[in-house]
Image (tube, rainbow, N blue to C red; front, side, top):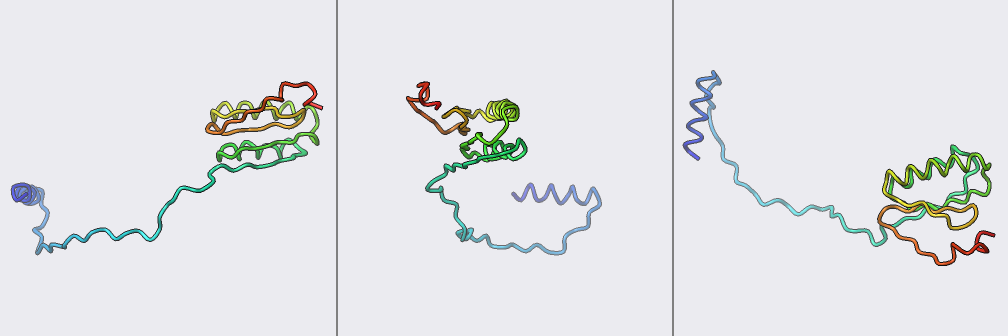
Length: 130
């Protein structure tokens, strides 16, 4: 350590830095324990229920998916053309986030983050879709 300090001193004098008047050794103290602690949430999974009436309202579903929230979308009040556009958009958003877009009823869809899973045995039943 002394060798390094000597080299640093020579280098400083060669560059033209003035000599330090004094050195003060500050004793190192152990770091105090933080008052704030991060703990794992008991329920990290959140679900948002949406019943949009316009295409613009429904775009918030992608924001919720981006925040890793599951989204249940009831699209009964949206025009068919807007519904088709929205589903295309959400399919792309789900693909980009490695998420899933599942149809759970005739006009109800579920957006799931990548870590969530959904299993339902009766979604293939034609009676289920009213």
